Structure formats: structure tokens, C-alpha cells
Length: 129
Length: 361
Image 1 (cartoon, each protein chain N blue to C red):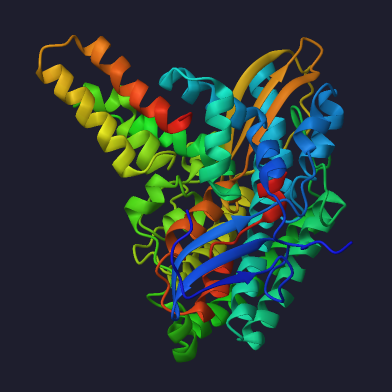
Image 2 (cartoon, chains in turn yellow, red):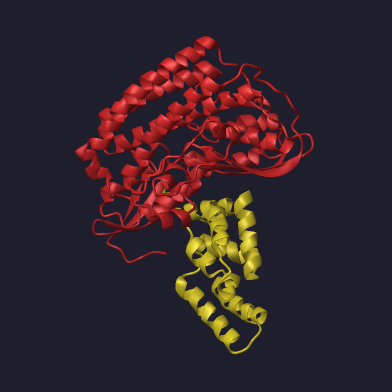
């Protein structure tokens, strides 16, 4: 039986990378920040990132967390730069929609914690529609 | 992730310019590269998994087998990690000997990196000259450690063998020869008009992109980031080490940083030889348990070991973050993005000195 040599399904190899010690720790940390299951995070990362991105994910995550300056608590809580610029897990449009929703709720008087839960729910919809 | 493109060009996994198998898929528009996707998995060793549960005496041999080029620094960083866990200090003479062997390792790694680049841009004469010089360095490594590649030279508390006076003399002579020859080869590269056409303003990595991708080593230093862990290493601090930094961020800058670092390494070895005191090279010590993150400067950049060991010095958990992980990401997702000709893809990729064996571990 003939099979394509190179256009093979890369998901098992990507999963192997994601279950490496550092990658696993980082994926769990991201799941914790977003309040979602690790399986959703892994599946989303496998779909969106290539193998080099996955290998470098822990270093990018650390660099992204270090770059958080605390100027905008909503952006930091949602990981606006972290998940879009550093990791590339969400597109700018997806994150901007969640950010705008959270920001609007905060501006309308909702406590920050509750508004962030709403914003994370919007991101959760992207991860597991 | 896919874009509407003219054509997607796969390069590799087997390619005349690649030293190791990797496949990069270039999405192009005309000659311009829009984005690049990397496919790994052709040489996954699973070495971190093999290391787990083994005593440090076995892991130290496995550590230097992560990479066949910079094996000495893997040995050095793993041993220094175990020393940090166990509060063991190497003897002073051994600390200088470690620097000497580590710098020789850096020199041979930089020489093979620059050889690969010159070979890729079809300047085979210079490439072969550089490979020839690398043999002198390899001979010195063999003379001091007893082996060319997997040396297992460093052990907790010191090194295996002392440097004999005749070896020190031979090392000084070799350094003088290398300095003379490398100066000529660096000028050939620096002033070559055809080399400049293939290297200047190509594959630019901006400082911002380098920071975002956490680029390290010569790749980061060629983009204006003064990052070098040798500046914080206690023995290197005694040797007044200053990192080489350039700001162009292109292929040319990355190769020139490596050329200039060759001369820094020669200077460091000479100073280490001059400052090295007499005394024992094995201090002894027993490896203990603990958990630590420890980094050292490999030829390609920051190499980090995360080690958790039990009270007998057995490695319970380990993760290795090699510099190529960051540099390949920086190269493929930033340098190659927007490259104006597909012909520059291989040269740009090689200019970041990618090590697939390190990346896949």
C-alpha cells in the first residue's frame, strides 16, 4: 500500500512534544490560567502550532509572563499578549473579542474577578466550541 | 494557519545543506516567503525519558550524547547542575581546565557552523579552510581529554585529567596558528563582495522578535541583545569576559559574531592558561538529592537543565532546554518570514546554527 511519506499525520508527534516535562508543565499552567481542561489546551495547541513552536513553548511562555507589566489588569488576567504574541494560541481577533467583552463589563461596574470569568468564558468557547 | 499562496515549497527532510533531517514548508508568494512551518520528528531520541530513574553516573554519559557537536558543554552543565544540588565546588585548577575545554568545544562548534554557512552559500573554499582549522581544535580536545567528541571530561568536583606541560605548550602553539589563520579567513568573509550579496540584509531578526522568541547565543547577540551566561559564571568572571554584540541582525552579523567569538575564546584560553594555579584536579564530593534549574552558555546559547535528584544522586526527573529550540523557532518564524527569495531560505536557516539533535533530544 502506498502512503505519502511526508504529508503524514503529525498529531502523534506533536502530542509527544507536548507531553515532554517542560511542555507538559507549561500546558498545565496555561490550562490553569484559562480555567479549562488540559486536553482542550493540548488539542488546540496541536491544531494551531507547528512542532518548533511547541518545542519552544515553555521559553516563550516564560518570556511572555516576564513581559507582563501590570499596567492593564484585564489584559494580564486574560493573557492578552501572552497567548497571542508569545504563544500564538489565539488570533488577535479572538483575544480582542474576549478583551472587549471583559472591558465593557468592568466599565459597566461589574467586579473585575467576575468580568474576567466572563472573558475567559469567551476564550473557552474558542478552545472548545 | 494556511494562507492563500502561490506555492508551498517543502525543503528537506533530506537536503544537501542540512546536516540533520528537518523539513520546513515555505508558503510563498512569487519568490517571497510568507510563512514557514517546521516538521520535526525524524530523529527523536527520547533521551530525557531514558535518563529518568538512572544514577547521575549514567546520566552524565547520556547528557553529552544529546548533541554530537557541543557534547562538552552538556557534560559541563549537567555536572555543574549536580554540583549545585550537592554544594560541591570544583578545585581551582579544574575550574580553569573546564573553561579551556569548553572554549575549545565552542571554537569547533562555531567553526563547523561557519563552515556550514559558507558551504550553503557556495563559498566552498572558505568552508574547507574553516573545516581544516576545526581539525586543529579537535586534536587539542583529544589531546587534553582523550577523546574527540564524547569526552566525559568533567566530573563532580573537578575534571578527569590534568593538563601536562607539553600539552599546554602544544595548545599555545595551536592557538597562535589558529589566530593567524582565522584572522585571514575572517577578513575573506568580511570583505567578500559575493558573500555580502548572499548575507547582508538577509534573514533579519529584529531585537523585538529575538526577545519574543527568546532567541539566545550568537543568534541573539547578532540582533543587539547582550545575553551571555559566561558573564555570570564564576570562573569566566575571573577571566574578564566580555560578550560580542552586533546590531545588524542579518545572516552576515550572525556569522561575524561567531568569527569574533573565536578570537574571544582564544583570549580566554590564554588567560586561563596563565592564571591556572598548580594543584589537584579532582576535588571529590558526593552527589546528593535536590531539585534545581541550572543554565550555562553553550556554543549556540543558553543551555538549561532542570534536574530533580533523590538523596542517592539518582535522577528522578529531568528536562533539557537546549538553545536550538529557541533559535530554530526564532529563525523559522521571524527570520525566514518575509525573505525575498526562496534561494535565501537555506542560507538563513543555516546562519542560525540549528541543531536538530538538540531540538529533538
